Image (tube, rainbow, N blue to C red; front, top):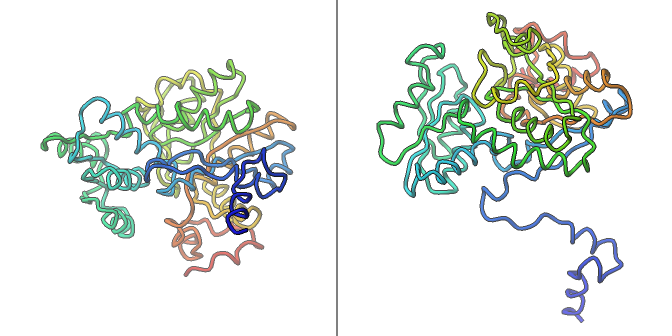
Length: 368
């Protein structure tokens, strides 16, 4: 009897009328190690903002990647392409200059594949980030924060470090188009398939340019140009003004609390797709902070500021294109690495952003 019960429980959906069999048949497949779990993240319909705009607004749940962010995809492809080109062989070393999630993704991927990982980062980053990278097995070098043009910039130091070692690569996330390739081959196709081709618009912010460029390239090609692709940009970045001015870079001014997004130049990842973009949206820190709290309260989603910025942009685009349309964006990562700031009244006050938190949502700011 017991064996018969097991056989029935694991029957295929076609063999069993029980709804439980259908659910089991649609369960996540098995994967081969950490890297096999990267990608195939769900699209979450954001119900409240969808109702407000009359559009279906979806967020790609990249915080559900095993390393906790969209950068897991880029990290995997940066290593994968180095392997394919014979630049990295067993026992090798991966070196990158990064202040955030790409380093965390690379540390995970390297640990899984048996490579050494070396990270250079500005010494302005939190001790928590340094500790996490070291916990993941990375060798970390915090160095003075200087402009990209300075030879001592953390990216240039990473490049020199890799060049000094045998069997080592500098992954160069900003200008290595393996980053963009990751999203052409995975993120874009996933969004298109999940929405059965009903993608009227896509938007996200960009740092390296990989996610926006790769998804834009794929969606533009598969939709014959029908899908509008729009850049979302925080304060302190030149990209919004670059798009709005038709390609004229202006002086970078201002700053933002968002991390990992915004840029002072057009990276090699973004450059090929700039001409495909339909426009850009500038999002203030005030709007991003408000949306951090709204997503938690209304959707139960504990998101970082860059994810919130993307949702603000999606809402603005939905209102512009009109009801009945479908807009997709990216939920880059959760708020876990930023909680001591985003949910701290004193920190927000210090940034002049406490007033951006709606009165009825201030109960979530529980940190000093």
